[in-house]
Image (cartoon, rainbow, N blue to C red; front, side):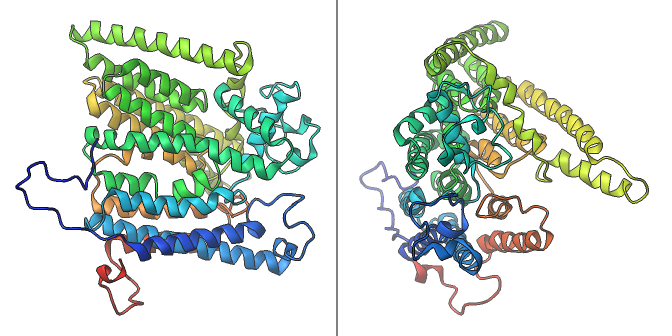
Length: 502
């Protein structure tokens, strides 16, 4: 295990200088997270019938000017959280803090959101309803939440998804079913329990990152700052919450195990990730190359042996999980995997290009936008297939290079898929965080992470076509990225000595 604050091996070597805990930075982010929590009770994914606020003396924050105030409080809290994250990043890049302070910061910033209403999404209400369907004798892969006779669950599901069968794998349905069985119709308990279950993924990611850093050549404090303390994890994956956190944890742990020659365990873990979200399957062809590189025969025999062993491990694990979850071998969930393609937004590069072309053509003739969007989406799928096959073939030497290329392909599928939701980019960046990063590259990542949170409203509605708001979001995101490299770029403070703020 790699730690960037390890003691020198030789007893005679000079001791490393003690690096203080950035208390003020951690407190700033924790205060911001608390404000997000407070604002979420009026501005985030609040319940249609709220048993906490209801019609009591605080119910005013759910409506009118009260909700506007709650929204402002939430955004102020988010900006404080971002400010603290950027400050912490400067400490990390200057080697003023090691891994432990980053973990303390991540824990302090995440903890308040464990009990918050869902922020920037309403997906968790769909999870709860899909988990309740099998408890009521219905197949979640055949019917949507609307078929439930439990108003407390159905009325909170976003209208876009209320009639859609579950697009998730059998393992996640099993976990959602367990949460629904414990929580019943108590949605607040269900949301909190779902977050706690998904923290399994965060735990796996924390376990895997030191080893991935060792193989991929990065720095542990930077990897933790990016993948664990960043707003994409704290706000989207935990505050959301999103089951992508569970998939990412299995993916990272599986990749590390295969790199460490625990091949069967690694494939089992990646298969469990695929039993949450099918996207995890992209990792298996790359990990076959890693496995083959550890064998000692000819390249062809090594590949065949690794391929057969991986496929067998995958099949046994997936069939077992499916029977455990559903009581039968049911692949009905694959029919709904493409359900997100019903969403049309310009975060998806093919969708954006299709919309731009349609807008230009519409200046001269009337045309159906879906024609342009669907054609470019098909072209985007072909481009992704080319990238994936090319990267897979170039990864044939195995080792860490195969995992690097695997991360690139996960980023490519998020960008080139028919629909990209902001948290999809965590699939590849959870692995890529363990790479060696240049500071300018990290500034771009900071700007992107902040922007991808701001693309949705605190209540989970798409803001991508609210152009004045998006312009403000871009400005804030660019400022955050620049601030990583240049403290106080707006020259608002006299004292620029970062050590004074630790």
